[in-house]
Length: 252
Length: 321
Image 1 (cartoon, rainbow over the protein chains, first blue to last red):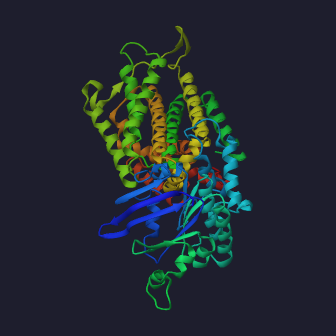
Image 2 (cartoon, rainbow over the protein chains, first blue to last red):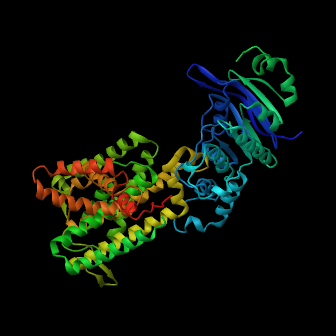
Image 3 (cartoon, rainbow over the protein chains, first blue to last red):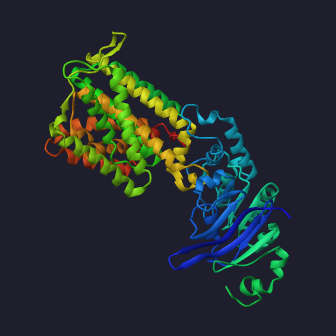
């Protein structure tokens, strides 16, 4: 058994009267792909936003190794080695591919409060950025302006930007959203490759993809954790089938 | 910024033309060109905020005016002050003011940022407007330009119009180079990222507020430098120098010239100076009306300002990003 890299304890987030995330306790294990599934509105993206610091929890606790993440700002969480990608493509549209990845790569320098030497001259940053572009498979697009790339390529870039920060833990929010079959297949392969060196938290609607890459699954419904287990356990769980996967009757 | 070849040639030519101007131009226009170059420095400093960091500061005149007033305060009534004392006081004063105003302002975004910078600048305006020791609404005279001497030996005489002209020209070029270098450096990459997509820049691990604050302080200090030159050039500082009217004018200059290009705002300063002159002759009572129509036309038809027109002609996109 490996140890938990990221843990939540009774994590909750309310928006006014709506409890989007309700007492969620999950241990995400090191070097594993842990998928979170659930119907729309189950609170999956809200949970990721809590983990990445984009939202502050109403109550509960998040720990990452020895660090308490609960009240940490977004940039500090990134600096601790947690990278995230977004469901809605969130890139710098007017920058080239390289420039998009450059910033992430540059953020791993001790500081970017450097005013004299040209950024280009920092070869270690360039190497990191190029490595990220290589990993996400955009080598032949390195000097292409992001807005001129296809939707699928922009989704790849989205992941590349995150990889440029050299994170240990990846939070992937629906990386396959809106992709065609071929493109999806490519990204699934990419996630598999990334899983060899990273811990991954994956939100995804595409069940084929989820069962292809996940080592562990958590099912969320109405902000609550319904079940957590191996893909086998989840597949065979009557409770999950009733609530979500469906046995012919439409519950969601 | 990487300069395309035609642009580089144009910039060198422009500096050459400015350098040759005192030899051929008459004294009145020489005075005018000095003021336009100073406006160019002031506008470039605002471009760092508006065009590169994405901070719409509507109180940029505060630093310009404050620095000018500081020169007036440290200049004795009957002799010149040393530039080695006066310039650091002016720059530090502007930097400190920018640090304080920026510290509060960068916590806000959008319309709130605009309003808070405006409000701070108006506080400065009213302070100097009410302060009778500093001339109140009439302003205060600076009778002597600072002396530039080393060990009692004068190396520059700023009272000589030619010397002062070249002092300002060199200041303009150096200011441009400083900003160009900063924008190419890692710091410049971060503020461009903030401009393009601040939330994502933060998610990549940057404390964007710190970078915005530093950008604000650099811009404020450079605006202070422009104010120092303005106080020298005009020999008077008045509250109008730090009012919202002045902040609006410099913002118009930046938009007219082209945001996010650095050289654009300098072109904008000259265009504005020229238009002012031309429209005043054309319709002296309501020339501002003509200027307004012109600015509207530029915003509608030339969203990248005069600099955008230039890059259209050379068929090369400004490669800032």
